[in-house]
Length: 82
Length: 224
Image 1 (cartoon, chains in turn orange, purple):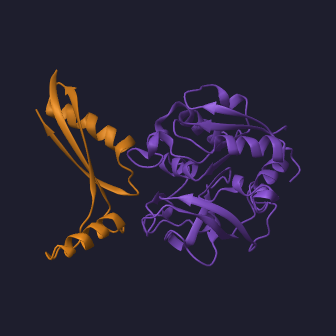
Image 2 (cartoon, chains in turn green, yellow; image 1 turned 135 degrees about the vertical axis):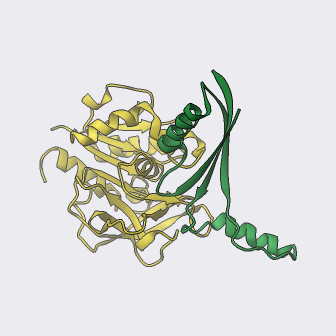
Image 3 (spheres, rainbow over the protein chains, first blue to last red; image 1 turned 90 degrees about the vertical axis):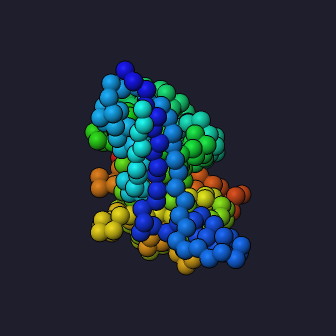
C-alpha cells in the first residue's frame, strides 16, 4: 500500500451564477486592475492509501461522486500524487 | 392510521424544538425526535420532518454531510415503500435535494444575504397530502430565514408538475421560476424553504403554516 496525496477541486458549473465570485471580481477591479469572470472553487485535500495510482483514483472518484460534489451544481478535477 | 411524527435531529439542527412544539401542542400529533444515528425508526413513524437549521454547520455545503447519515439511508426505503410522508423545511429541503429525494438544488441567494422575513407564497398545487387544505392559487404568508435558498434545476429538466409553492410578488433569493417548494413524483415528499412551523399560531402573526400540518394529520387519519 502506498500513500497518495489527493486534491479535489470542486467548482460551480460554468452556467451557474456565482455571486461570491462576482463580488470578489468587483472588489479586485477597485484596486485599479481589471479582471473578468472571477469564480470561487473549493479544494478538499486528503491522503489515501492504495496499491497504485489507478486504484487511488477509483476510490477518490467514488468519494467525489457520492459526496463531495453535487452533479446538479458542480464540476470537479482530481489531482493525485504519490 | 394514527399520525406519529419523527423529527430528525442532526448536529446543528435548530428548529427541532419549534417543530416538536407545534406538532405536539398546537396540532396535536404524537411526536418525538429521531437522532441522526438511530436505526429502526421507520417502523414507528408515519410522518418524518427534516427541520431547519445548519446540519453539520453547513460544512462542505448545506445538507451535504447530513445526506450520508444513517437516518437518511433508512429514509430511502421509507419513501420508496411509501411508509409515510416526509417534509423538509429549509435546511431539511436542502438535505432532501442533496440526497436526491427531490429534484434540483439550493444555492447561495443571488444577493448573498441571509434573508429573514415574511414572504408571500402562491399555493401552486393542493393535490399533495401536505397542501390539501389550501386552495390552488391561494396566497399565504410564511417566514423565510436562509442564505442558500435559490432553487435551481439542470437545464432541460422538467419539474412543472412538481411545483407546490412559488414566491408571490418579489422573488427574494433568485430561485428558478420563483420556486419555493416542490414535491417528488409520488407526492409523499415535500421540501420548502419557508417555515410553516413559525406561522402556526395567531400570537406569532398567523396560522397559514398550521394548515400544512393539519392536512398531514387528516391525511394520515384517512380523512382526505
